[in-house]
Length: 196
Image 1 (cartoon, rainbow, N blue to C red):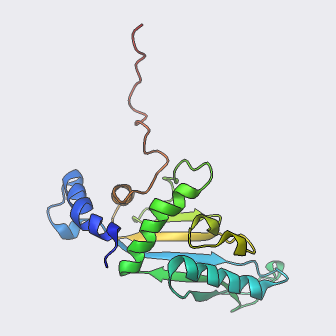
Image 2: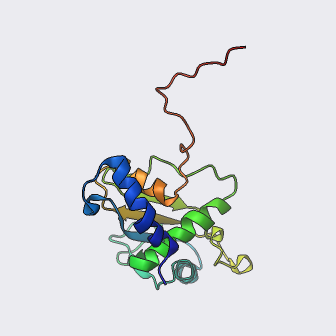
């Protein structure tokens, strides 16, 4: 069964982006190609190996896919880090699983953040990709709160085919990403006080 977000992308988002940006061909419309979710563990922890296993289990539960270990490239003595040491985990999502994860992230997980006022609009990299930091895994409903041993933060990198930040932002806004400046008026508009 296809994700509701994927169906919405095909039926509503593509026509909306074609109308707003003037794309002539459907292949010009930007799309999400992959989502990379990664986390890192402090190598100086006393129970470092257990922390790494916990992080991998949490990532697997959240994404529904087995994570790959990430390893350090060089030794750093101050961080108690050795070369080629496992320091984190990452998952690359594509296709249906990617759309299912994005739907859960946008519609379920982000609104559960306490005092949530929207995600930053400054996290675009200039090439149409967006990176979002999540400080706590408990915002996902799949995680059982009484089984959490430690807070594990992770990054969610959304890779798109958009050529500019503006195109990527409009794509993510159509998908329902709650940006913090969504309701604000542009600064160029002068606000006129109503007549008494």
